[in-house]
Length: 303
Ligand code: PSU
Ligand code: MN
Image: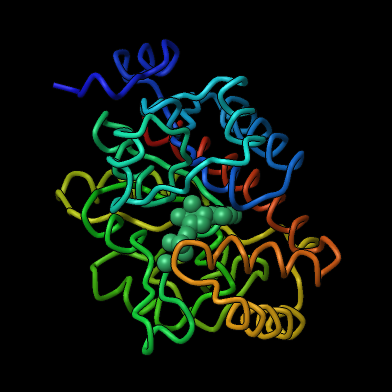
């Protein structure tokens, strides 16, 4: 039985009961990944993209200590504007319920919650992973652990550019997580379209992806599958530029003693300022583009 702490909105509930196509969306990118008012726009446009493809969107977050599957406009606005929204991963989610907080779910917690109600497909911007310098502080996102522990089909533009992408890519392999992509031979680098890490398979159409995912399900593969969708070409930023901004921002983070769960939001904000909003534009475009692809894959997978 589902905990009465989990509230599923009526549209999502109806879709679950009738086996309709559903795509889960996360809320940390709303509260901690993007500034206001772009965050509200992206949240709404992502829902619209999922709906345009004929699927039902389920944005997940925590309001007053209740886990909501299918946040409405009002609730999205709370998470987008309130100054005291927590970023919850697995280690602190039950605490935010205990304190009746408003909180945003990361990739890790969104996957965990969506799996519990039987949602199979999830879309985000970029997953968390192994941080640069992790040999010193072991900062590795719980996103990787949850991808390992649940079977979720996850559409993303790779792991965020601020991470150690080689270590992240290798860890995914260690965990048995297939790394496939849509129309690319390589894992994308979030704000840029191509890294040097070759994917397990480049699928060039949605039908093939859906058929492949059915096989994954049939064979009871017990971890997630990552489906990479690169940032639209006109928003892709040159890797050298990004690396320069990343290095500067990491130095600033060190000087200011920013670490742990505050690091990713800090770096994203700093780099956006250095890039004069270029990374924000790329981030916005890729999140909506991923939601659209997720909706299409979900629809095919369900048919
Ligand atoms: N995708 C984005 N922006 C974000 C995130 C994803 O485009 O801010 C969030 C996700 O919720 C992801 C989190 O789980 O960043 C990673 O945080 P950390 O590195 O602390 O695990
Ligand atoms: Mn971390």
